[in-house]
Image (cartoon, rainbow, N blue to C red; front, top):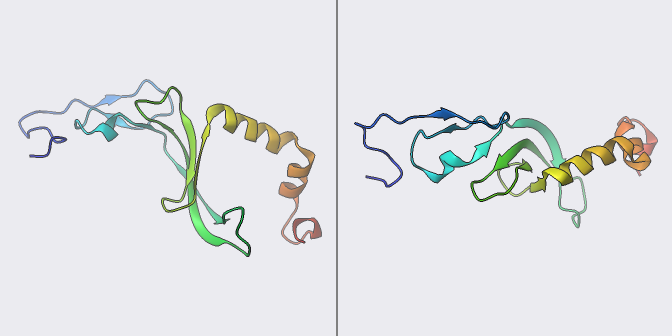
Length: 122
């Protein structure tokens, strides 16, 4: 028997997490992943590439969510595609990014441009 599975005669006690964003059902098994706090991810289609790459990048579906492992001091905002595009931002870094997107004139100009706007392409 796997060390992570409880005997079938044992009724696993699952509990709702006290973190308001966590959707993990804790205690269903004794697997360490059951103690990882995860939010419901939100998916969106995106084109991604590494900063040093050139060209149009590749189309993928990214998911953004909140993650806190048992040994973390605080939650992280994670953006990934389940393959090779991923970044985990501390909550403070995610707040700074949100603030910059709303207040930095260059970022706002680029993000507010429409695809047909000459300001959005070289």
